[in-house]
Image: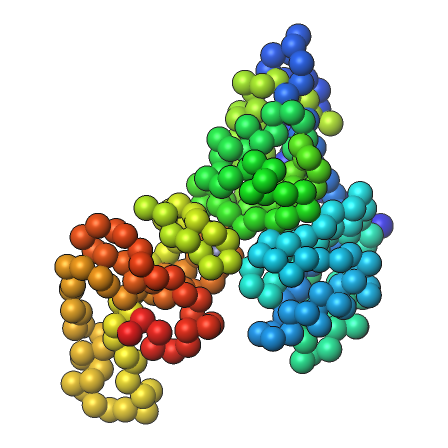
Length: 195
Length: 91
Ligand SMILES: [Zn+2]
């Protein structure tokens, strides 16, 4: 596997920050999945696309807006009508889908090098994200596995709740450092750890 | 102002981009009727009240949507996906 170069650069500072002698409100990290792909089904082919995703990746997606599922090494969630973002720790998933996806069902786009994956986990994760995004983060409105497409100050973000108090954020790679710094500022108040 | 995206649910207006008046009909691209093109490009009904508009959820699912919005109260009485509503949906 090719070693990935992080776009976070010097802004990525492992260790405790903010309220360093107190509890950790949130833990921030950069995930570096081998593959990030977008799957887009033609109108009326959404069920066929979900079936294909189940065949290839074993991920079962609910047919709801933003419906998704998250496993430790792979995840997928709805980002728009007929569109799914799929993340896999393994390299080369694009080639698998490219080979298996019939052109009458939809198309696959490789975004592995176009997005950065940032994880925030902890008791204050919802609170920190609520400062940045104008969406409802309560678990009733945003259940585990579900995804959202939203924006923070024009930085387009696709996110998935991958655990009770855990969110994975996918931002454009070229904006990732700026977004990371904003996220760190937002988390300072609750005390955070970068791992 | 909140717009309820058919896919994403209620979102702040800052996530959306206005795509124009939904009341106009684009002339046939082959048409050389200058009057029809002039009306399409320049004439607006400028309603004080219920207005048909095209918006895009550009900071979300990126869907194009047909909206009926009151220009006096900002109350939105109808939101439909353009893919369901089809061409000329603003009317
Ligand atoms: Zn939307």
